[in-house]
Length: 144
Image 1 (cartoon, rainbow, N blue to C red):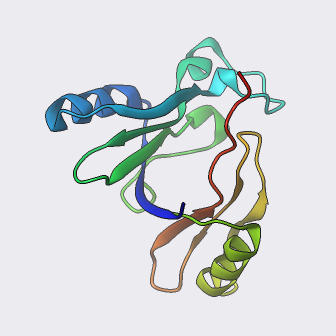
Image 2 (cartoon, rainbow, N blue to C red):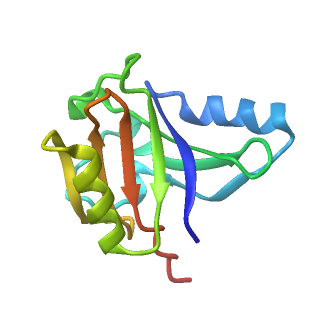
């Protein structure tokens, strides 16, 4: 099922922020919480970075979902106004990811569509209007 979410980047306090939002809106986290240390990405994480949030979701109002990650300074990431909010579009197919990316990136490639370790075909770009977009297929459901 396709959906649009708001994706937020935090400087290391995603879990604190999302716990606050969950409690404030009286909702629940959506799906599992992924930490950087949970992912097989060929990176040797520090103990602190391994505990940081790679991805989590919380519903806020009327089915709208916030998604987020901690930006890791050790990986050259700096959270600032301008890269802390992204529109996340999940679509049904890889072809639709490619089509939307081509139309939004308009030659301003950031992260071209590619398979990701978390099971999604994912991309991100800044459009010609200065809006950040993520376009992806839904994450694969982890085997139990």
